[in-house]
Image 1 (cartoon, rainbow over the protein chains, first blue to last red):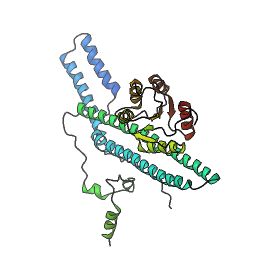
Image 2 (image 1 turned 30 degrees about the vertical axis):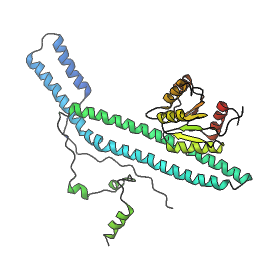
Image 3 (image 1 turned 30 degrees about the horizontal axis):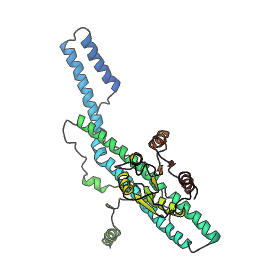
Image 4 (image 1 turned 60 degrees about the vertical axis):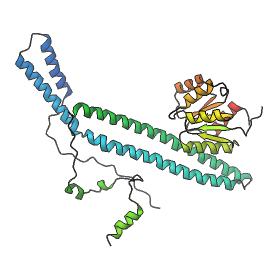
Length: 213
Length: 128
C-alpha cells in the first residue's frame, strides 16, 4: 500500500495591503496621558483639548481598522467552526476505528476459548494489550473535547469584540469572484479528508469522472 | 471472605469505547455480570433499582459527574457501603483528595492497564 505523504502546511495567503497607520498602544496611552494631565493642571484651552481628543479618536479608528483587517468575522464564522468540525470528526473516526479493533479482538478471544496451553495464554496477553491500548481513544477524545471548548471560548470573545467595535454594521464578507474560482493553486487543493456529511461519495466521483469521457 | 464473582458490577463512562474496554477487561478477570451507564444520573437510577457489588466510574461526565455520583451514593443509606472505584484522566492531587474526602474506595488514573485494574479490584474486594 502506498504510504501517504504528510500534508504540506498551508502558507497563509498574502492579503492586499491596507493603507493604514499601525496603532502603537504606547502612543495612544501618551495621548490619553496628555489629556488627563491637561485636565488636572491648568485648564487646557478648548482648542488643545479638542485637538488631543481628535488624535485619540484617530487612534481608536485605526485600532478598529486593524482589528477588522484581521477579519474576525471570518475567524468566527468560518475558521473556528471548521476547526471544531474537524476535531469532532477526529473523535468520531478514532471511535469507529477503536470499535473495529475491539470487534476483531473479541472474535480472537472467542476463537481462543477453543485453545489451551501456551497458545491460549499468549493470545490472552495479546488481547489484553489491545484492550489496554484502545484506551487511547478515550484520552485523545477528552483532550480534543477540551480544545473544542477552548475554540468556543475564543469564538465568544471574538463575538464580544465584534459587538464592541462593530458599530452595528454588518461586516462585509469577502466575495468570491469568478477569477478567484478559476485560479486554484496546488495548496488550495490540499484540504485533507472531508467530514462524512460533506464528503463527495464514490458514486458522485465516478459520475464526475464519467462526465469527462 | 471469597469474592462473589457473579456480583453485578456497574461501569459508568460517557465514552462507549471505554465502557467496552472495561467490560472486556473485567470479563478477562472473570467478572461477567457487568452493566453500564453513560452518566451519573443513569448510574444512580440503576443502583437504586438493583443490587450491585461494585461501581467503577469515570469522573468527567455530564450532566452528573462521577464525584457527584459518589457523593450521592455515600449519602444514600442503602448504597453508602458500596465499593466505588473512580477511574479517570483527572490526575491532579486535588482531584484525588476530593474523591477520597467524598468516600472513594480506590482511584485509577487513565490510561491504565489490566494489572492496575486487577490490583485495585483486589484492594477493594479482596483476593479473587
